[in-house]
Length: 220
Image (cartoon, rainbow, N blue to C red; front, side, top):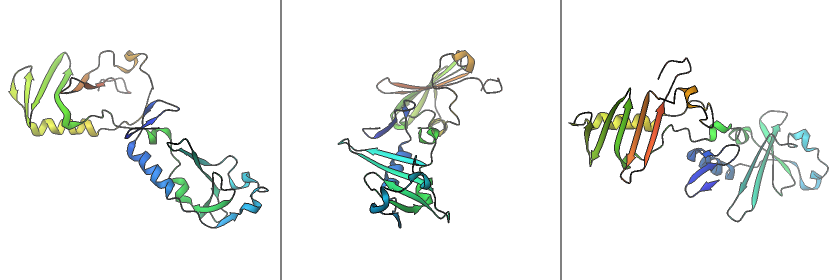
């Protein structure tokens, strides 16, 4: 579901969507080429859709516009030459051929559609950074283009290194989703995380990343 400029996955999980992936899907769906007609409207009623991999379809796409109107694409199996795939669509009552790549680009898993950024934040809006590690806290604050270290001691910060650190965190992606809810933080070493990295905006809003135990049991 598109909310403003963002895409949100609402089923089977409630999670932010990969904006670029969803925008590409919509554009690609509009551009799906419809080739040679295999079953025309007159013969469609007597066609055995299962023979084309269309009952049920191998891949189906359903789009709902702002008016609530549904538009669907149904992709079936490969044709005998395996050069094309069968295609039908809502209200078409016909089966045509389309390039296999038109179908295969929609053969996606849930993880392919999720926003896989570890800690999405607006780098330009960050006023403070707080890093907590082994009972020690480092606090950084930005004044224009200048970074200051506020604690544990006051120093002028190295803007290049700090911006590089922010960039690495900002670009880091999720490798695998282990659990949708954090019901028992201790299982993952997150009851007392090894590292806590927080970015704080000028309005006080914060985004926080906690790092717990590795899969082997060591801290990371």
